[in-house]
Image 1: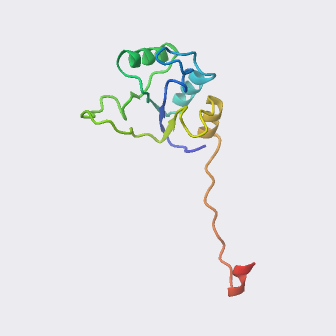
Image 2: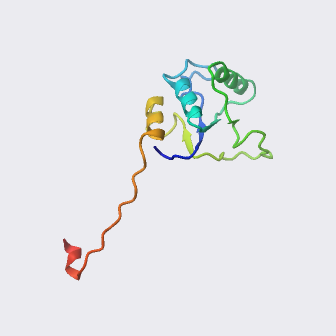
Length: 136
């Protein structure tokens, strides 16, 4: 598991939650809504983080609601955040996007990485006695 604490997870829409058919809404990606609901049940806060705006953004938010997922915030770090017209990166612990290096890994793998794979603790080097021990 990446963390036992509640995470803030920013999630792209087109190509991640649904197949990329922008400006249309594509079919849901396999296990997308099941995974998003499970992440919420696990206590994580989800932010919809998408290029969409205006009517297209409202359609995507409504589509997610119809599929049982309501987001903590949409294109902002928290609901009703004041951006003063400045575009910037939102505050999140994890970003899930199909534009990652290597592409989208799939919702099963996303959930597995967030919940089942603890980050390894840094290896502690043992101090060895004596000058020549550094060559062993």
